[in-house]
Image 1 (tube, rainbow, N blue to C red):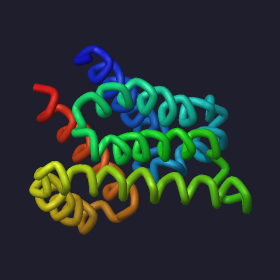
Image 2 (tube, rainbow, N blue to C red):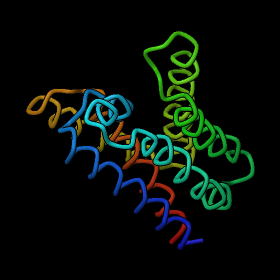
Image 3 (cartoon, rainbow, N blue to C red):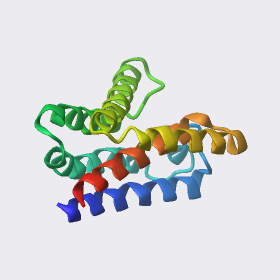
Image 4 (cartoon, helix red, strand yellow):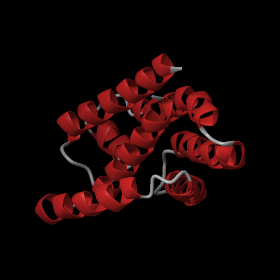
Length: 160
């Protein structure tokens, strides 16, 4: 299971580094789809970066979860897969799917952490993201990064 976790984390991290290197710090990670397209780069990388890491992380997260919290791990990974399957968030229908997937994924991850007695992860990570936001702006991107850090750190803590 540790290999699935590591591949998931590496794949997502590689995409984030690539997108920031090509586009600069975006308004949100989702905006990199449009930014890559504008720069004639493969925009579908965003879709793969949301779907594949979530698919790889799901079995690990489910195994690390207590029986009554597994649905939150499923919702968090599933929501992220919906984000990747509807990258055109500026369009009406895909925007609804995209934003709903984002909300479900983020809320489920934070709830899982809190109900798994790791409330201190979001309680420390989000204020740090807030400080970074003050310097670099683009608050949504930093909130997303904090959510990813929390989720992956929480799964790792339970895994090891």
